[in-house]
Image (cartoon, rainbow, N blue to C red; front, side, top):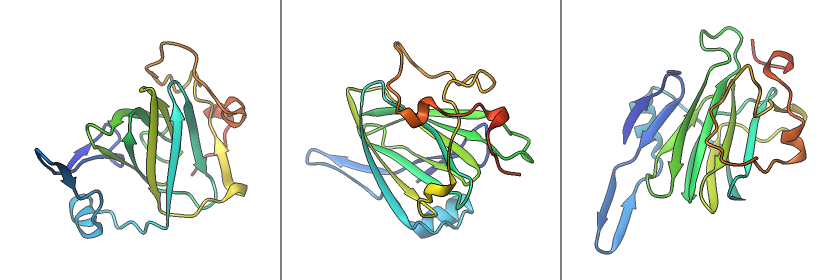
Length: 181
């Protein structure tokens, strides 16, 4: 596993070692011991989530103010543009974002720690995304930041208007959203 630190040091891109031959490929998606050794993060994953989305679907920017979740995200079908936004007021990178292409082809994963909002845009015809979380879903703490908040100025690779849920259309701008201290 290769570790790539992003412009926001707590957000980490992981590149697994893939063993491929004429039969196909094999790789270790997650190994708790290696993850801790390579990143210094001890994560206790308690839930796995799987989403299927069509092209131009944009999900996010989601977070939980109660029971905040760390997420280990990967695309197993198709390609997504995956985004993490630092929403920790005490952080030097508060309000900053990073975005990376994750795909079934590149097999990269993105670690998004608690205290960040998360979202993704489907770039391919369809995409299936799997992600592990460090805490359980808590609907009472579920929050959404507006995907196109001008203060964040996320450079989504859009060629048309995104397909959004009612929840995502009703997201709040960062300046009025409930965030972490």
